[in-house]
Length: 469
Figure 1 (tube, one colour):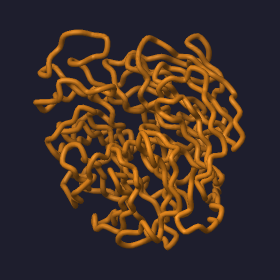
Figure 2 (cartoon, rainbow, N blue to C red):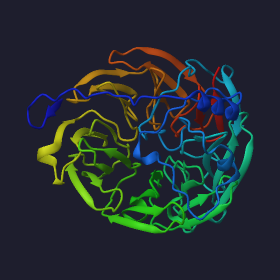
Figure 3 (cartoon, rainbow, N blue to C red):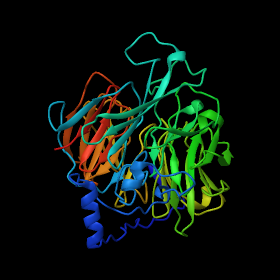
Figure 4 (cartoon, rainbow, N blue to C red):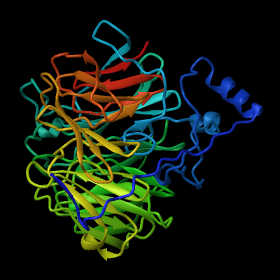
């Protein structure tokens, strides 16, 4: 049920890795700073949206001053270093339960659908409290607060918890996801969080608020979920819900640098990619179109029709200048488009469309294949990236709903269901189920898993789990 738009066979996508070298001095510095925590792999960033902010007038935090020179493959944003749900970590756990391979378990001050992120010796996570708590009655909008927490990686202890009062009025209820679905992003100096109409905030690593910026005042019954993306000195915010805009803010001050309008029915987190020409492009999926912008200026590069007749939730992935996009509940639900064009590129650059996809979960890419879970059918998919042809389509036993996006690490695919079960599959184009792990704690698991060295971080509405040997 796939088709190539021009009828031709597409070339298989190339796979490359940047070479990595260390001097003996660098290794010694790393060992001295990290001490016992040798689980972090050191890999220099090769992605545009991970560049550290340039030094400004603000003094770096003590944490950044002490360890800022050490670069590690940490989980700095939604879906990790590349923004595409992949990690080069090794030794991740295969099996766990509520009583097996739990390094620690931390109580949370409230629910949330955001994911944890990892920076140096800390984990950052958002939650909400005071209003519309699943399984609880009472509360009012006046009591609604969003929380940004700093947690120790070693034992899950809370370092600090900053609560931000909601700007009212808010929605009386947010279906399924609640009021904390946006994952933070972090650099050496700041943590950036997006709390919908309450605004975009920057905190230092001591928990001090540095700036706050409004990006729109509208709300929606499905809430807001797009996460901040860092690029050079900018923070990108998909404010589709709040103002139908894609907004670029200055990292140091929160000042608006540019704004692109017409971003409608879009709940996905943008992605900075590199076209085959070397041009960097900022990609976001909206209802009806995939859009590409100049990340430095906000000027539009190209648009491609999706033929998907629904709002767009999954975030795109890309490889070798090809963008892959899922979305929708019926009809066309996936497509591939070659980046690097100009204007409407539907006829010239769209490579294929497919009726197989997902309405919520984002895919991963590996060695010429795409992998993902459908959000409500309990089906795991593998597709050829160059054609969209489905290689396997397997229903997982009692999978139920899946809102978390796919995680690819250590040669495995991790799919987390809303009731706390994680299906672990082999990351290859032949279906092989390796394990099913149950963390059911009578709460909801909407956030995507994160990698912390050789451990996994999984959050529910009540707890943050650190899973490892």
